[in-house]
Image (cartoon, rainbow, N blue to C red; front, side, top):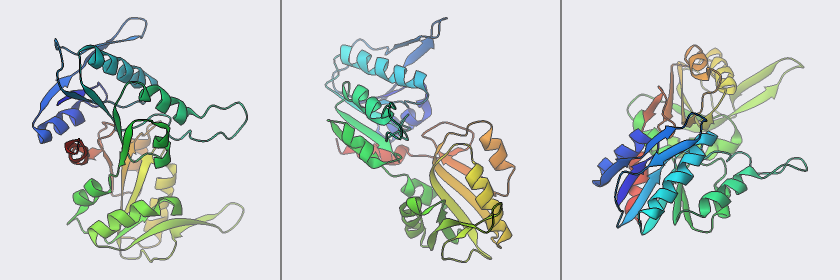
Length: 285
């Protein structure tokens, strides 16, 4: 088995290869003057299985993934395992208005043509993988997140809403602390209260966990509300730190004590590694 890292996931791919004790190759990817992607795997052939680790967000990374996999096929790889740490278009999994595409399904259909197995991490909805005809699995980042915060004095784990409460439960159970979800209560036409649905956060060191942070607005508001309600400190950890429009700086300038994410997307906040759970899955074959 060899591990090939695309330009979006070089560090993560190298870490996975190190854990597995197998060869790592970084795809040589550049852009032509017109913006089109050029990539090359600098090998004469590949005799065994190949693992390609590359995000499909933003769009340019999707094209790079397709080209890398085609190059791997041409080199004779017996089997291609596609690891997509952050799966682009995963949130567009429904048709809300006539004429809209189901983008998540479209992307699965395209990627399905060039792999034998696909591995993702904390998809928006795991059922998106049902659009693949090949073997597929969605890994959960709760384990590395909990391992990172073990021994750091967290008293309570919260999710931003009830829909993500399973993630808070998973992390909370691993840390051996209570979990809850945040709930918005409209007090008036202009005032909204954000607080844990059941638990009391007064005097507690709180960890908010989520699958993704994009603009960060909800997390910033939640942190301020929790501190006002008496929380000693508030940290946030997410799997995918998308951080659009300078969101990371705004989060770091808020009431949050710390802002962390996994290395599914490589950012200055990517201090939690998912390499271990990827390597564990790859060992299964």
